[in-house]
Length: 131
Image (cartoon, rainbow, N blue to C red; front, side):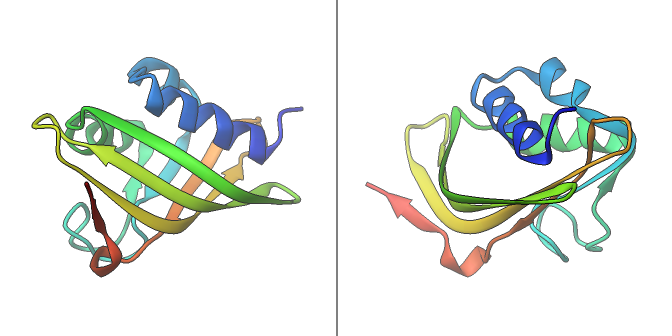
């Protein structure tokens, strides 16, 4: 069976490829995406994007709005049905400017082998411009 680490790798590859359908197909029907965890500009209530429709809306409004997103994972820890990745995400906007942020990005596998949860731990105040 596919591991949580492999699901995370598939998720990152789909995001980098701008492959919305491949990314959404990875999720269990009742999955949740918390990016970042807690209240944020993307999720003012901090409840996460829960279920297929909410996750698709997150993709359309947050992920698809960027020219590119690249993941540079320095370490990955697989424990049971979860994986925690430590690294940096680099985002390039349509105007050519960019930012990067360090964080811990976790993936939980559902009993049917799909993503049950993505939780991203990063601090908005730690976002750095990319020259």
